[in-house]
Image (cartoon, rainbow, N blue to C red; front, side):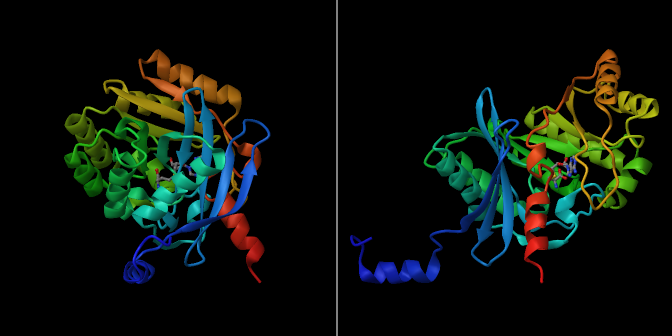
Length: 302
Ligand code: SAH
C-alpha cells in the first residue's frame, strides 16, 4: 500500500500480522465434493478445516487449537497432544481462506475441528464476535455451532453470555461408567453434572441442545444403551445426532453397521426422541478429526 504514511506502515509491520495461514494441501472428495484443507500457521504449525456443501449452502468446520489435550479414545486430533490455542484471527482466517478458494460465501460454521473450543474460551468468544459482526462476514449466530466434550464450568459461562449459537455436546455414551472408558474428560465431570449444565444452556438461551453420539460396534450401540438414552432424554426437548464412528488406524474401534445404525435410530425415535443420522462426508479424504494433519506430521518426521 502506497497510500498510507511510512510511520503507519512501520507500526503495522511491528504490530499486525497480515496473513495468519497459508494453504498447504486440499483434498477433494470424489463422493460428495467435501474439501479438507491443511493450513500452515505463521509459526510453522498446521491445522485442518473442512468445507461441506449442503442444500442450504456451504458449511465450514474449523479447528480451535493446534492439537488437543482431551484424549478421547477414538479421535485422531488428540494422538499427538496439545500444542497451543489458536488466536481469534487464526480461527476466522480458516473461513476467509476457504471462502476465497471456493469463490463463495460461507453460510454456516461449526467449531468441530481439532481442539476443544471451551478450553480456548476467550479466543472462541472473540472469534464468534468477529464472525457475526455486521461489518465482517455477518454470519448469523444461529448458523454457528460449537461442539464441546463437556467442560462444565465453561458451559455455564457460555450460557450466561446468552448467545444464539447452537451448543453440541459430545456424549458418546449413555452412562457415566461407559463415558469414562471413551472420554477422559468424564473423570473430571460426571455425566449428570454435564447434562445439568446443558439443561441450563437451554434454559438461558432457548437454544435446543444437540447431543453427538458416535456409534461404535458392540460398545455403545446395544439395546441397553438405547434404554439408558431413553431414560436420560425422552423428556427433554433436544436433538441427538448419530455418527457412525470414523475408524482411525491407531485404534481398533469399528463402526456400527448401517443396519445397526438405522435400528438404533428407530428405537430411539419410537421412544419419542428427536434423532438424526449425520450424513457421512469425505470418508475418502481422511474425514475424521485430525487425520489429515496427522498424516502430514507423520510424513514430515525424520
Ligand atoms: N472437542 C470438541 C470438538 C471437536 S471433535 C468436542 O469434543 O466436541 C468434533 C466431534 O467429532 C466430537 O463429537 C468428537 O467426539 C467427534 N469425533 C472425533 N473423532 C471421531 C471419529 N473418529 N469418529 C466419529 N466422531 C469423532
